[in-house]
Length: 293
Image 1: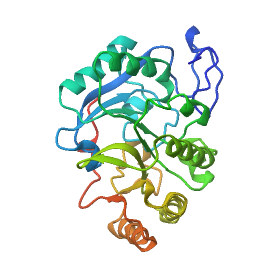
Image 2: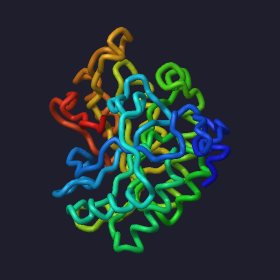
Image 3: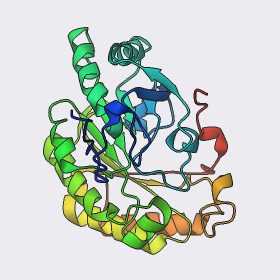
Image 4: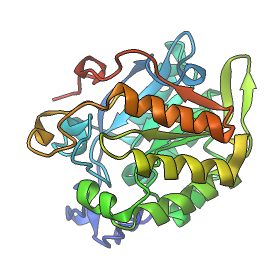
């Protein structure tokens, strides 16, 4: 993938990252990871019993103001790895018992990730590859992943471009995310399982933000009318207000129980069957991983 004029994401910055120049994501030509580990807090069909083999990539094409991974997405904490080292991490996670390889915010490092996956497969990697993304993707970039990704797990954060601009500086987010999800579904199709573990398919996540219930309903409605129960929808309540939004209402509060229940009830009344919902107190900084410094 060409990063001499980088257009991996919809921001299409066009910078030559090989010379040390950076675009919106702030990433240069070296891949940086914030952490890799067995992750037990994904959806049950992803984490399973042993955990998802998660690799958190530093930097991000979105940089949402409320991001729970702010330390790596915006502050860019992490350590540099080579293509071969990344490939070895995938194999190590398999040896640790991971059910899949979970690539978190990977888009801006795909020039390393793709050959790392290909090398790992030559050396014995057999796990499903999961692409865990904000949803803000270029269809042209996604097409280069066909045949490599088994499970897509995009967010659908905003229905209205005004919110996308205010909180993520990406007013074109809704249109790009719709197109991206369509391409992802074309590639992987309906969900396939091995017992209780997903082996292929798509889970679209929506994190309910405080005060954005109407926006959330529009997203849920669109997903169900477009894909029915051929995808899974994960309705999340774990929004955690961190220090960077302390003076930014309504993001400086947690999502109310009534707000979340109203969204879940709405989804149920639509007829959605393939859904994940959360119970109890999910908003906690204890769920935020410790990243490399």
